[in-house]
Image 1 (cartoon, rainbow, N blue to C red):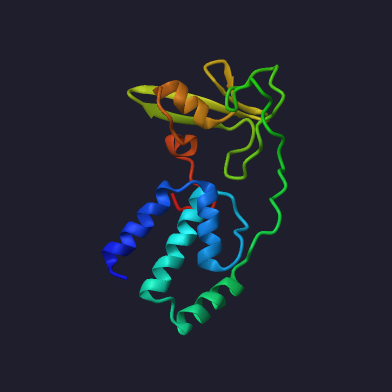
Image 2 (cartoon, rainbow, N blue to C red; image 1 turned 120 degrees about the vertical axis):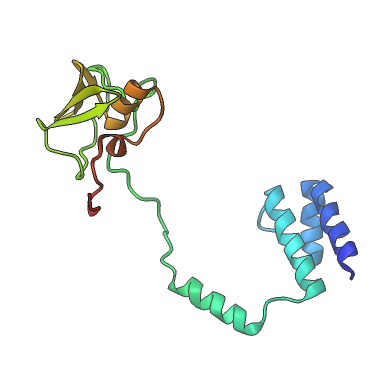
Length: 171
């Protein structure tokens, strides 16, 4: 099969319906497809057609891939969420007494009561850390990023904006 014929056959896969792709999968692989996902079918069939036409992986490459797969730490279950999900209709970063979620304490942030200062465009900024967030200009915020966004009008990493190094980083 020439490369032009191969390209044409792969291009035909893109215009096939899911039912036609499942039939083609059966023809190419000799078994029914476990998937009904159209794009996955297109990719798998295209790979198999190309492998048949141009040659598959060498035995050495297959063994190496198998070694890598066997050494991989595969996650079997989703991680358990340690903090509650934000309530619907509440901003994730803004603090309000009605908010049903509290700010999650972070190890790399200063203790409650610590004052964080920064000079920004000739202005002295002063943020006080609290148990449940931060205070800036008599307003409460759930994160330093929310304060940085309030000040600059753009998205910022709060720790970076205020010059707080992540745990383990040298300042």
